[in-house]
Amino acid sequence: MTSRPSRPPGESDVDLGEPVEREGHETLLPSVQRSVLSAKSFVASEIGVEHTDVRDLPLVSDDSWDGRNRGAKPNDLIGGRYIVEGQLGRGGMGRVLRVRHSALGKPFALKIIKSRIASNPKIREMFYREARLASALTHDNICSIVDFGQDDQFGLFMVMELLDGQTVHAKLKQSGKLSPKIACDVMWQVADAVRFIHSRTILHGDIKTENIFMVKTTMQRRLIKLLDFGLARPDLGRTEGMDGTPEYMAPERIDGAPSSQASDIYALGIVFFELLTARLPFQGHLKDVLKHHKETPVPAPSSLVENPLDERADELIARATAKDPAKRHPDIASFMYELRALMTMLGMDGGGRRRAMAPEATRERRDIDNRLKAGAEVFNSIAIPMASCDPSGKVRVANAAFLEFLGCAGDAGGLELRDSALPEVYPTLFEDLEECATTRRPVKRVIYLNEGGDRVVEAAIVLRAAPNGAEVTAGEIFLVLHPLRALLS
Image 1: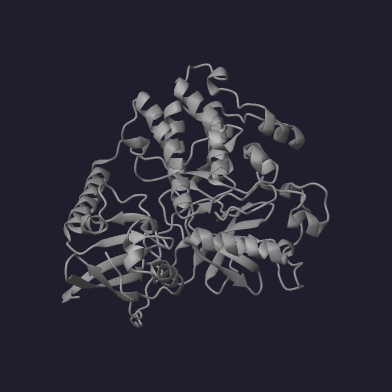
Image 2: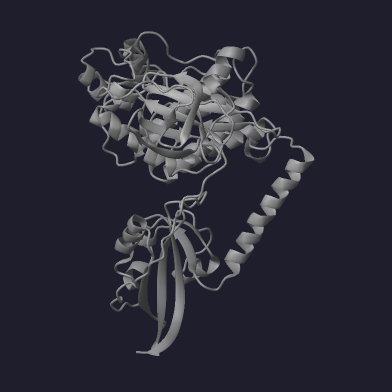
């Protein structure tokens, strides 16, 4: 293909991405408890303490910020629309309240950051970062953020779906270790949530059993939700300083190395160990815990439990918690591949995510599956090339016509537009992807394709931002190529 200069993008007043409100669940959302910040931390330096555990930060009244704020009480109105019904929990960073939307009548969980902490610019930045990142993530295994902002009287707040159930941490304390099958089911759902956020180039940074919630559902299915994105950040590879929870912290993070997918994988390995044994591999004083993470291999779970475990569980955890990040799983997909092999050996079908359902639920699942299959069949039969990609040009899904257009075979997953011939005929492709993602307005270009000889095809390419409410493709760009007419060169 040869290129000619692209024409300017077409103007459009179409505004895409209206937020779609999701159903909330009656739930209990636990407060954050054991996250810590290093001596470099802005919390420690601001308050002037030598220790770093947020549980030890001095308790301050919610009315200490600028003399305006006071603790929210039942029937108070927050953000002009959330009526306080009671308190669900309290942690080092603030309180979690049960509220009801004044217009919708739906219950939610609302987190308020402590006034003195919230007055710190760094904390405010962290709060808004969590809210922005988490609100953009829509996944079955991630707790939904539906709203956030600042109330003149009560300060910073974030609104989440309510979850009915308990944290895995509380479950382990109450009932002891999980059976291998249940532990695998929990891990599969958590890993799928982490896979999803990693695909959005976001790191969690604080994966632990206190941030994993077991939801009660009406169907006979175990539903797991990943909570608390307070330490989540875009994967830019330059976040320094130690933050997270010591008992789950990767060795390189202790030395101040940037967060990475590998450090999230390390935490998953520690969580899996904890599910199978009901204990953490390293406990005690903070200094000793960090030393063990750097020097001591995580024990094999099979050596600590009475009932024998499949050796694959030991191998999976040993690889995920390797001291050298390069020796861990290269990505979550690799972690899940080994987990699936373990689940298959345990006789678990379908990735462990489905359990016996009531007939009504089975019919509902079948209907959903048929709709998905029908959509895929229609999508792949269209002769016009279509694809969805992130702003960097990494393709998530594409129809057969798009793959044929690029001269690719097989699945589009992992395809990079940068490695294709498309940039040759569309020089401003990546600038336009960024513009579309930023402005959320369509971008239209005309390109010219030389099909050999004197035949040139004029084609239009339209980039359109995926709706914010899209479950899988939110944040991505829909790309459609329309052949217009044949020309003679």
